[in-house]
Image (cartoon, rainbow, N blue to C red; front, side, top):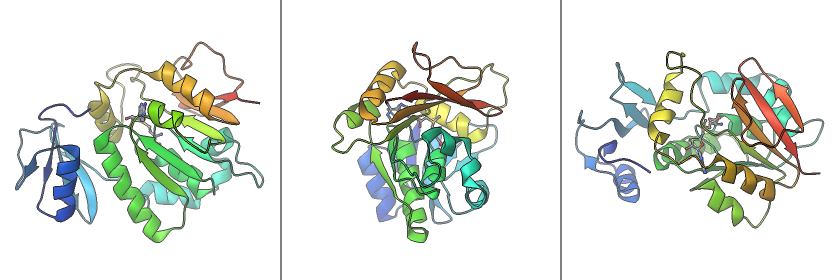
Length: 246
Ligand SMILES: C[S@@+](CC[C@H](N)C(=O)[O-])C[C@H]1O[C@@H](n2cnc3c(N)ncnc32)[C@H](O)[C@@H]1O
């Protein structure tokens, strides 16, 4: 859900006009400081400008340059998320990333060869993600497809069930002064009024996955549900709780 006066689109291209219409957002001819966020085109990428930050922050999803492109060239087998979904040897499970966000985990999984379906319910994040995936797939033959909407609804109606459902729902930082990266702060602002439906998300994921459900949590966070995980993979800041189906 997008709150009133939270987001507007700036620009006059056909794509931006269509985006404003489909998201039912105001379309502006020029910048307006009254909106917390502006969606615009910058350097050929759909870009979100967070105007309410101390300094304006720009967010676009770019898999082809910077940190993600660098990570893609490293040994992907060593990535904890790759181990967590069970992609080892020649096995490449199909993964449904039901809380896609900025698509970083999905990108790593697709880069090692897993077919990945992403679901994102926030319309602004989904638009950024769609743009990032479109540019990525023009350059690389990865198997990634995006579904927009609530994963609880979408998972229940999938005709082909994935091997793995991957969940990384939002979790508040441990304390208010914790250093949270700007892109995460933007996700938190955009999703702050979304209902907490983690239990339903987890139960639907368990019904949907044929092999396992993987839940990414900050190390300090409790499990997503009362059910204990079958096994856990830990990293410095996160853990992956793994629930096996068989
Ligand atoms: C922490 S972010 C995920 C980050 C992601 N793993 C990455 O690598 O960029 C969580 C995302 O899940 C989305 N989300 C939460 N509940 C959802 C649901 N029921 N259906 C679809 N998306 C959901 C939120 O809108 C948010 O964008």
